[in-house]
Amino acid sequence: MMGFTPFIHFQGTCAAAMTFYHDVFGGTLTLHRFSDMPGGPPEFAGSDLVMNAQLTCPTGDLMGSDFPPGQAGKPQQAITIAHTAADLAGAQRVFDQLAQDGIAKMPFAQTFWSPGFGMVTDRFGTNWTVSVPDPG
Image 1: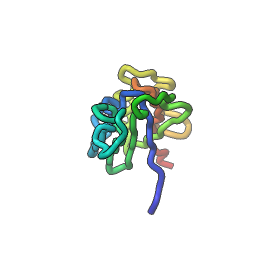
Image 2 (image 1 turned 90 degrees about the vertical axis):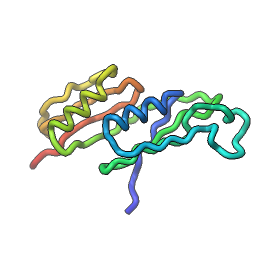
Image 3 (image 1 turned 90 degrees about the horizontal axis):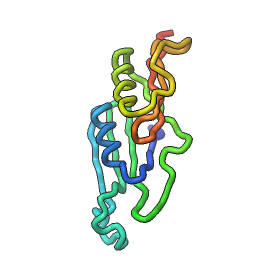
């Protein structure tokens, strides 16, 4: 089965952000730097920027990279990653961790569609919604 995997672009903070997400969600994190690329352009040599990062979790994958050396970009513009937790306590924990040094746009609380839902922009500029499924 094929699916979609969010891929986030950062301006030099990919390693820190993906390490943070690894701490929040668990799983396995793999980082490859631009300097690791065999035969890469001269501007890649010695670069500590991340070319490809993959966080593999039982609930899904999250990928990311920094913009290549010397290239400008606008990270995380107009996109939100939705995370659905298995239970209320797990959702609250994830929301609280993402909100640490970030901005809680909608505090985590019960809504008419979910026993727990919140919106947050984390300290790396990534927008998230965190929720628990409606038991029906």
